[in-house]
Length: 253
Image 1 (tube, helix red, strand yellow):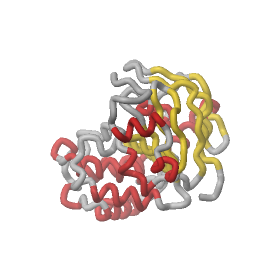
Image 2 (cartoon, rainbow, N blue to C red; image 1 turned 60 degrees about the horizontal axis):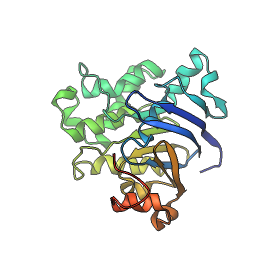
Image 3 (tube, helix red, strand yellow; image 1 turned 45 degrees about the vertical axis):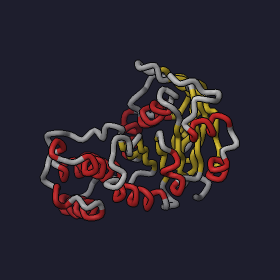
Image 4 (spheres, rainbow, N blue to C red; image 1 turned 90 degrees about the vertical axis):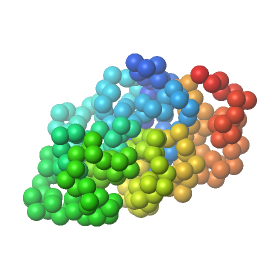
């Protein structure tokens, strides 16, 4: 981690159609730093990645990337910004009429200057690293859950993004079959030139990957701290969440 500020979210307020909210949410992320964002269902954590990725464009507050307000970007700057983000979405977002190989190659074909040979070589490397060679020609509807997860991860990192957003990647997944994905994500998180934000309901699964933890409840930040502070659980909201208890300051919806 070199101390350069990569991302800053400043006083962001937003309510989505499902009622999830962010209320005056602020945090920053340095290059090489990894952040885990979590909270109960409806806490507001679920809208953080769409806000950063720019799929939500109407909100109060500002998001800065490499020192510039994302809102100020023109068409070409916004296009380049999206190239510098990798986004592993909650529903994975694979294109059903494309094969695994074609899904992974898609961002490279549209957003890089690599030759066809270079794209094929890179895709082959990713297929090998995530043990997906056997399904390179399959379409998403023929994949298992873990194969879908790994394909979406390969697509998200294909452009070697400065910032990787990972959104509820383990939800509904067999944890045994997710080991390959977790090992690959762990290697990515160990890089000191790239940053990762992971949104999850299970922050304890990412303790070894993260530098900081941030918890939301009812749209507000109720805990922000280091790995050691997260493990110490000297916070009523955090302690209740980790105990899955009905007793505490949070109310079950």
